[in-house]
Amino acid sequence: MHEITVLHIASRRAYGVPRVRAELRWLGRRVNRTRVARAIRERDIRGVTRRKHCPLTRPDKKAVPALDLIGRDFHAERPGAKLVGDNTHPPPRAGSALPAG
Image 1 (spheres, helix red, strand yellow):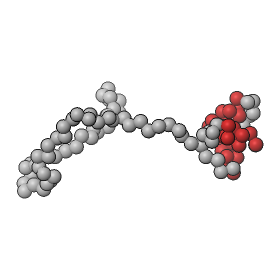
Image 2 (cartoon, helix red, strand yellow; image 1 turned 135 degrees about the horizontal axis):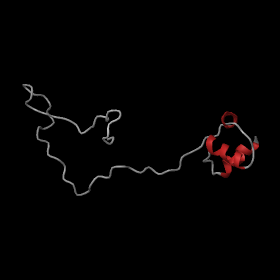
Image 3 (cartoon, one colour; image 1 turned 90 degrees about the vertical axis):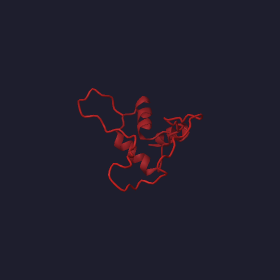
Image 4 (cartoon, helix red, strand yellow; image 1 turned 180 degrees about the vertical axis):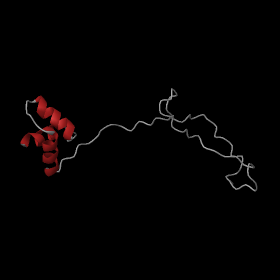
């Protein structure tokens, strides 16, 4: 299956098994996914992802950091003297109408 190598090079070495298989099927070749995967593995071909990393959270440049009121000392002499926590949310229950996260 010389076409696999040609398709991979024509895609600027980006296509992996799913895209190579889709191209072969578009060209009229009846191929199985496992056969394409085996041929790609034998030729040591790797597909790449060229997507840029896009962070989901963008910090506010003008935001003032919160004050450290306990001086990073989390040890307390008695229970309830220092209350600390985090901002993680538990996942919603199955079937709940609340949105996730």
